[in-house]
Image (cartoon, rainbow, N blue to C red):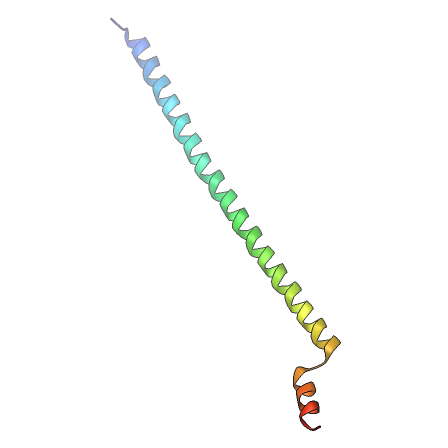
Length: 78
């Protein structure tokens, strides 16, 4: 037969193990959420950088070749 002290010790032990398990699970959820937010933020920033680079390239091409409407208008008068 288990004594009163040992039963109390066993109860505290089980509660402590369960608490540690649940805290660990919660920490895993939070860690996963932080990881996912960091990944999404990084992908979003990459897309913004790519859009800016594409815009800069388009402006540079436009400045290098001139306005397409001016070329079309100039050749139509010939």
